[in-house]
Image (cartoon, rainbow over all chains, first blue to last red; front, side, top):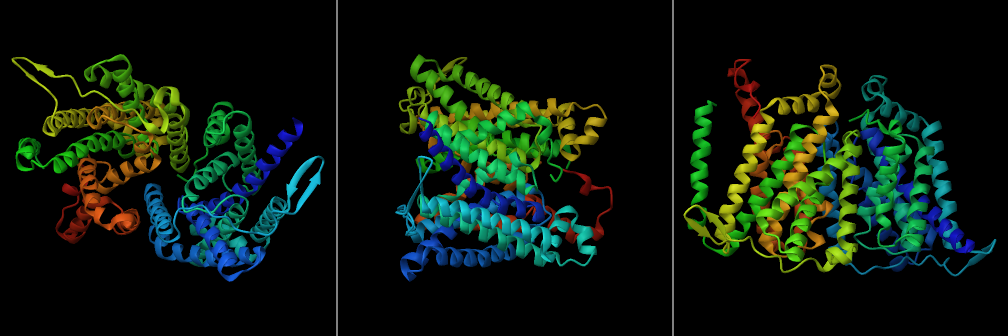
Length: 289
Length: 331
């Protein structure tokens, strides 16, 4: 009984790590460009496909495939920023929402057209290695998701905190005009932000593709959940986002296991509603709308 | 424009609309026009929320769906007439949107949009999984047509698409009139004040939350009535109609035409119902083209077709315009 619970909880934490990666990329873009990027889920989906092709066609090992997909999606992210998002920075938020939704529709259906809908799995070669720990089974796959996510988040936190580019990013998210006056090249930072967010999404997609499946329609529900994570976790706080991501992952996993699997996508919403009722002061936010 | 001239133009176009079934007798065209009317009501009701009070909702299709399901289930299971269920459907959807509005309207901007989108997903999950009541993904079939309408002197049975067209036209005109009266009243002034600057509006004693909830509930209720009309027109409903993508489609409609006007949403609804039909020949790439078109449209025409044309035109004759004249006029 308790082992089942622990197993579900562990799965929830793994899921939470993946949400943390997608939500952090989304929240960076949101903080710096003030754009709600609904196409973020498509970066995640395309990243998963890139890793799939790297392992299937080139025969790259899993970790190399992860790096390949992260670099391709970093370039792709920077490219979408340049072509699609830059013209509308500073326009009303409904425009950026609909724009990114159009991009998301186009990319998802292109992927459907070229890659077809049948779900496929990335072969990581780690699924058969199992560890036994306190009566729980952990595959090396899930363990590597945990370790990789923690490493990536730590890397991101270090980057934002200590590098010159990271400092510039923080400056822009606080006050774009002042940052520009101080000589920061805002456009370069926009590209860097999208590249980072694309790479994180690709990493998350690759890991999901190894544990679950890769399919063209995997993006949209993840992007909405990542937004919930950002709302729950508080805008601009890495620690809050990680905590919220793990809560959402746990809610989905435990709720799906114990309450009803069919409604598992509803739990994040119910958590949000609960939060509004219990702690409205935490969410009055929206200072950037 | 002078008020009389405007009324004259509206009357002329209404009379012209009355003759549409005579010009296009094919079922296929008539179906598109009836759907345009339903979308016009939906776009108007969403414009009340998004365009006039400035609260971006991504869950409008949920209220549309609630109306459709309430109306369909009442008439299938209890044999109630459409003329009763459309009111119940509107009331039910309005009640739900009131409750959701009270909960979520304290959020702003993106946060509100995302939360309402999640509400839309939640409602979709209920439609899909509450099989005992909604029949799940199989949908509700065998919804009866509206009972014959007893007008003084004669009776009209609602059978053909042309009948639905006239019924829908009456419905859309009534909704447009209601929204027109609403946004030109004190309530409308308050809503616009909230859209422009909520703090300032509150500082002069406008109860912002109450007005936002009011607009949200009325919009949701009207969407519910449109859902009821849809259910009794198509005679079959299933959860795939009422998705977040459908909510976003409605948002595209109102931004296409320009959302802070009454004419804009109607124009957008008609265009975005008719235009995608031409994309059918593109087959499986249809949605790719839709997405790319949306991206291009938002980049090049951020104010909507109407607004962008207007600002283009105004920009060209800016020099000759006197300051306070026509350019101050909004709708």
